[in-house]
Amino acid sequence: MKRTMMTLTAAVVALAAATGVAAVAAPGGAPEAAPGAARKPVERSALLCPAPTSSDVGETTYTAFSPKGAAGKGTSALHAAGTVQEDTGAKGKAGKGGKGGKGDDAGTVTGQQAVPPHDSKPVAPLKEAGTPVTATTNRSDAPALTGEADGALAPGWTVQQTTSVAAGAGRGLLGLSCVAPDTTFWFPGVSTGKDRQDYVHLTNPDATQAVVDLELRGKDGALSGDAGENIAVPPHTTVPVLLSTLTTSPQPDAALHVTAREGRVGASVQATDTHQGGDWLPAAADPAPGAVLPGIPADATSVRLVVLAPGDTDADLKVQMATPTGSITPVGLESLHVKSGMTTAVDLKPQGEAGSLVLSPADDGSRPPIVAALQVVRGKGGNQEMAFIPATRPVEQRATAAGNRAKGATLSLVAPEKGKDAKVTVTASAGSEGGTPVSKTYTVKGGTTLAVTPPLPQGLKGSYALTVEPAAGSGPVHAARTLAQPQGGVPAFTVQTLPDDRGTVVVPTAGQDLSLLTD
View (cartoon, one colour):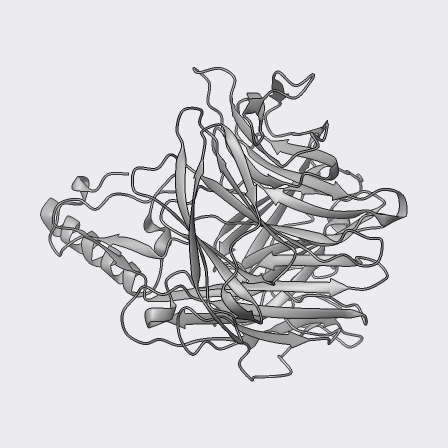
């Protein structure tokens, strides 16, 4: 019976590879292939892009890209999703929470309705791996997008959504790497304070309804109570939820946990600040004893850290800043105590140079999990602009950032462990309208951050993608890409972290004993 079960499980893992479920790899890293097993490219990937903006003076560019590597052909495309809107008529099928509404059961809410997508044309379909494709819209009602890539276009398929808003609430540059559907997301750094409007966008890619719970936590613990429970997200539809409707206790430094109890969703938070513009807050890496947050700009005027210890044990953390010359301890932050189930927020003094924040257990014997994110501000007075840097996974095999232009991009690489240098090759792809790929190799000294202007494709026309690949035997490395696009006196910018793309999975042979697979 044991051998039969092992064979069945091996078949399930093989099926996962065929459907692009790269998450069969352990959260902390991709397992090495055991004897008889093979690492193979995923054959299907899914991504979800939230509705970009409601501004009449906003323009959004989508850039899709897949690195070269897998053999054969493939297809990819994004399509408009439906949305949930207010309905002056009778009951709709939106599920509670779309605008703070109340419902008796998941899938039934008074005053709301699910509106089908207004356009079925594919957005930014790729023709081949290695060359990005772009699409642009200035519609204030641009929808959320759901899509898939298969075959040779599936491994590493990425879509960058970048929105420039010229004026009004949320003005600035808003950037996001479109997200893969999942069942749980963590967002430290959200706010329900008076100067912020934070919406979490929940998008369901599947043909069956998803049911989602939202849990808010602040400096004193739980904030949302029952208000965030049992939110229905209809098939192929997006539901925006204003976080301040989930609590009567305004909290400027909170953390949001999104859990799909049925189905799966993509989740991203759009944050709008009265004084500091707007940007997307992506989900942080899964809870772990430590965290690495790369890509703090050299000219940051404010850096605020929000940490949550989601488990049952308090966390004591060692705080270090990895600078271009080495790791330092911020003044007054030799250690940071985070109470169980509560958020802790601290301001970090800008260093005047590029850097990355590294959090690790202060006590070798205690390793409770944490989640963390940074809110970073550039500019002063009425010319401030904010962006977010969530904790991110290391780049193990490959990571990609699309949507780069000839000017305004900065690549940050951090090797967080002292004495463990990282050697990485960075490839600038062909341009979307022309150009030849170029590669350059960098060595990042252990305990430091290297911030560089990335290589440009020869004869670049249009936009291009950056792919980061660590060398075999390299020390751990984390990465982030900053896009800067000044708007008058406002230093508009956005930061996207580059976690590993999990473009491959380990596939055991039929009948193989899975105990041979190691993390």
